[in-house]
Image (cartoon, rainbow, N blue to C red; front, side):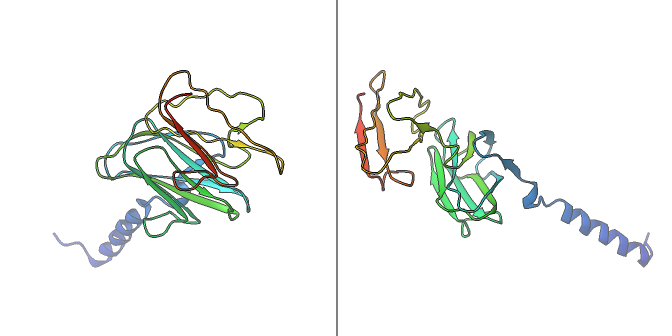
Amino acid sequence: MFLPAFFLVPLSIIVALLCVLSVKPASAQIELTLGQPFSGELTHAGDVNYYSVDVEAGEHLFVFVDKAAVWDGTLRIAFGHLPSPGDASASSINAADQVVELPQTEAGTYYVQVSSYYNGFGSYVITAMSDDTLPALTLGVALSDELKERSDVNYYRVDVAAGEHLFVFLDKPQQWYAYLRIRYGQLPDGQQSDASSYSGHG
């Protein structure tokens, strides 16, 4: 049975509208609040989750992904649009915990992509932070914390006056191998730090 031509036009419009509505806009991504962790999960290789975070101009922005286990993944961030492999303000590709850092933000919305690749997938906790919400050390005051998995990373900040002689001690209750690194103004890593220590002892 053939439909009259005037029925075909409205049906095609409905189909087109359904296709448009099925695309999730960037504004509908999960919103992160600075300093508040959010639990997520990638259940298959190739899965992608998106987040957004609103910041003021000139903020020092960090986005951390703390994985419950070691699995391969990618963390990307971009201003004003969803990041992609060839278009991101910062990115990290790693099997361990990950972080991206932007020393000077623009005012507006940054979008974050967490994706898995190869055989990597699992649960994680994502947290966006600024200098104000990054865990802080106080001179002369001990802070207890924990690394729960192999390749876990914890970050802290400490404010000092010019010309101070700074010491940072790591006292471990038992022998396990760990890196201790420090860097002025930005997060330290395996390639860039002002001072570092590697030891299997306290």
